[in-house]
Length: 211
Length: 307
Image (tube, rainbow over all chains, first blue to last red):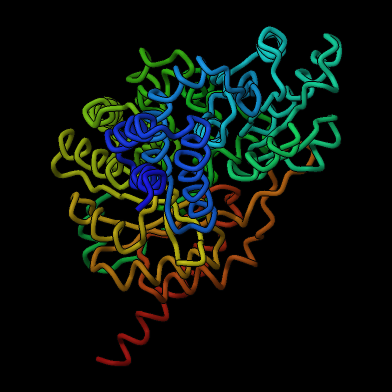
C-alpha cells in the first residue's frame, strides 16, 4: 500500500504514533509536504467526516482521528512554515458571549483544521470585541460563531455589527452554527452563511474562501 | 412513603414521574443561559410551586432541580464551592412540595466533559464530581438517584459507581439519550441500546432506560428495544416533540392528547417508570396519570378474571 494511504488509514483508526511515524517516513521518502497534508492527513479526515455524517462512526472515532491528525501536523508544521506553504485561510471560531457550550464548536475546529485551515479557537463565552479584535489582528478570512441557547444567539448580530463598524465586512466572511440558529436567522442578522454541522462547515468555509 | 420503591418496582408496579423543570422555568420567563440551579439558592419557592403542580397532576416520583448540580458543571458559573448548598436546597424544595406523598429523586446530568482518551478529563475527576453532588443530595434526604441524559456509557457507569459509594442501598435510575440513525438508535458517543442495557445493568443500576432527545413515537421504539435486551425495570421520559423556535424561545408542540396513545403503548411494553422530559407540563403528567390509572385498573380486572 502507498505510504499516504497507510497514513490516511493510520489516522482513521486513531493511531497518533503511527501517523507521526508515517508522516516522518513520507518526508524522508521525498514526498512534498503539501502532498502529505492533502493526500494523507486531509484525505483521512475527509473519510472520517463522511462516515460521521452517515452515522457509520460516532464522536469518539472523530476525536481519536483528530488527535492522530494533530500528531501528523506537529511533524509537518515546521516544514510547511519553512517552505512558506499557505493554509486555506485563517478562521477565528468561538461560542458567543454568555454561552458555555463548546462541543459542537470544537468539532467544527477539528474538521476545519483537518481540511487545511488555520483555526484560532477563542473558546466559549467570547465577547464581540474579542471575535472582531482577533479577526482584525490576524487578518481572518472567516469568523465562525456558535450558540446553543436562544438568548445567546442574539449576541451573534452584535459581532456582525462590530465587524461592520471596524470595516471588516464584506472581506471577512461570517458563518454561524448551533442548535437554535438556521439559514433564515443567518439572513436576518446579515451573516454570510449558516452551517448545519461540522462537515457542512468545511464545505461552506471552502466555498467562502474560493477553493 | 410506606412501601419502598424497590419493593414496588419488584412487584411490577407502575410509577408515574414528573415532567420538565427547565423548559417550564423558561416558559415562565427565565432567560436561557442562566444557571437553573442557582434558583435553588435564590428562589426555592418557585421550584416548590412547580413540583407541587406535578404532585397535583399525579406524579409519584419528582426530580430535583439539580441536573447541572455537579461541581464540574457548576464551575462553569463559578458556583462549584456551593455544591452542597445548591443540591441540599433543591431536595428541601422538592420535599416541602410533596411531603411524603411522592419520592424525591436527585437528578444528576452529564459532567459536560469528554473523558480520556477522547477528551482530557480523567475518570477519577468525573467520579469525584458525581460523588460530591450525590452525597449532598442523599444527605438532604433524596430517596432515589436519577442519572439522566447520558451519552457516554463510561460516564454513566462512573455516575452509578458514585451513587453506590454514597449509598449502597439507594435505588439508582440510569437513562441515556439516543439519536435515530439509519442504522438504529445510538447516542452521539456511539452507544447502542443493547450496549446501554447491558452496560447500565452491569454497572449496577436498578432501573434503566432513556430520556430526552426524542418524542413519544421514537421513545416507544427505544423502549421496545430496551425490553428485548434487559430484565430490569424500565424508565422512559419523552420530550413533547422536537423543539421549534418562536421569537427566540423553544416551543414544544406535542400536546398531552398527542402523546397519550404513546404513553399507553409504553405501559403495554412493561415500562414501569414513565414521566416527561423537555416541553412536558403538569397537563401532560395529568394525562399520563389517567392513562396509567386506567391501565392499572384493566390489569387488575384481567388478573381477577384469570383467578
